[in-house]
Length: 91
Image (cartoon, rainbow, N blue to C red):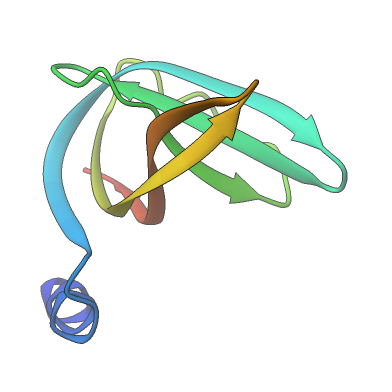
């Protein structure tokens, strides 16, 4: 498992990997054929987002390992920083 993460981090310099992050809230909303999942993590004021084709169990209160990179999203003319999740595993 760690080998896979190391390979991703070596290949893509902008990626960040964090382990044992506490999920405070998890929201899923439908967008076309996909579900947009938004996580808020303890100690962070930035949303972590990822897409899934099926609804996923609620992760609120659990610990996760995340691989992500920063992204800027424009909503109503305002630029908002988000984190795009590339890999998520429950710890």
